Image (cartoon, rainbow, N blue to C red; front, top):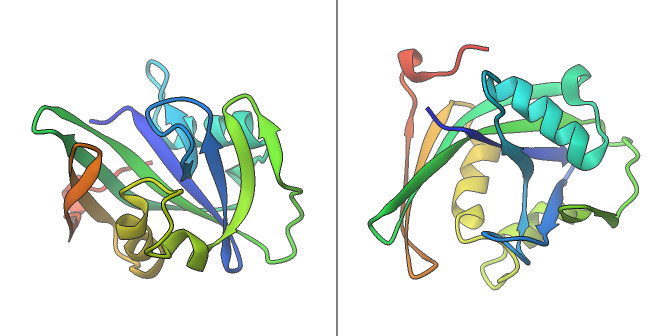
Length: 166
């Protein structure tokens, strides 16, 4: 079991992203989310964290569980998080940029986030995000990083018994 969540809030061809002020992804654009509290389920954590970080109440929006993103760093540190996609209407109004305690929120074009020359996103984003957005199956994204660089990425479909029950 993992104890973190990440959410990508999609409005047409852009995602609401957070440029974090703190490590481990300080200065990089990433989805919103956070750590689960004791006895909290992933979906409960997600709804709470998105509300705390953005002010958006996603409980009434279209939330899709997209799977797990796991990582191994320098052959020692391992971790993972539950990934979600929330789609809001194309006319959904949310003014950005917006400074919050954790950093800066802003709508970013998906093409900008996935640009191979973009050094402003986390190492895993250009690999995980296209599959998370395009593949309807629930996936396990496995990442290996060495010296802060992604050296291996693969994904597999989660078997039905490994999928989250919300």
